[in-house]
Image (cartoon, rainbow, N blue to C red; front, side):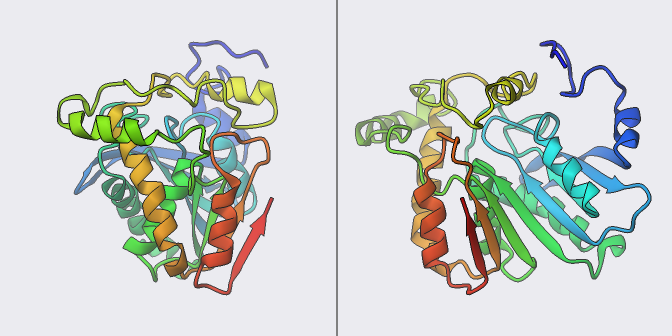
Length: 279
């Protein structure tokens, strides 16, 4: 399938309801108010099967839930799960300046508010519940564990941003300089774009498709965003030994945005005995 830049869906021009029905599922999207802002949410539910579990999914930096990230959700529904997704604050159709992250804890809490309401709804009571996070969304999902430590049966991390590769991480001079100026330039897209040209998947066609998302943030990293992500990975590294929930962590070998050492560190340090690491 050749993609047009102006398409709103990765599969082409087929109407959404028709496409989802052809996949054996129905989709519902809405806007959900949280104490931290309004977020855009999506539900993917099997048409004929009773769900055997629920999966709450968080996307990566600059992305949203309405493009190729849906492919994972569609597969999970085919496996018999009800899937719930939310555009993080500053992403997609949720509140905030596109590509701007002011507080990762609040960003995690906003999505978690929606996930908890879906988990605790009458229709889902008693079902196994899992949180999934991809890339930066993996780091955000890690933080959700500490905001709601007993509410989930397990966590799945896909190439999570637990550690930045050295070439991607802001230099000490950049952190000091931009921190001093943060009050004035927090939302400005001034950071060198070290993400540009880096692979997120091995297949170049899939990689090109990902970046054709019309709602994706493609500008230089904003000052506040990079400072906050640097703080997030430092915080995650300090809390790995306190992570105490079953988890599976996956690492795509073609991903150049996140560092595989982060996966390995969580596997070695986490407090839970129920842990799995797959390359």
